[in-house]
Image (cartoon, rainbow, N blue to C red; front, side):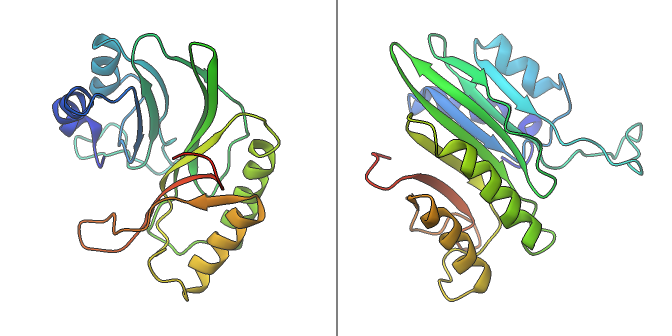
Length: 197
């Protein structure tokens, strides 16, 4: 999203225009109870969110302060979101939810790995730990977000490592086209192999 506060009208409009029931938002740049979060709730969305915790050096009282990062899952009325505790990874931001409608449910994981540094061994270890928890569940699994790894470069070591980790759990990335405005595939929508996307 790169700032939900600056794009809240577009987010709400896109949801209505495309008749979306669930939105997965990354890089929301929000604070707890920021304008965008309150506005989504006022529009009738059920919302689970996690803002990026400010660093100890952050000048949160400065007018120029921006809390980069942040993830959220927003759902229409009638769809139940239940927060699932999968721990708090240090190398990426995430929110995990069970999404229930009528008598069906799935487990979703919305991920944002900051792109300011290359993916580390810690990222892959923590991702593996989270996937170990998710993949033992019988519900369908959907993992969305921005991993900031150039997945359009299959020979890149980080791309190979990411694909190797998800394949180890019987998962596949459904996105095969560029997702960044400057080209490149950084975003994912990962499901179980054979699961409808």
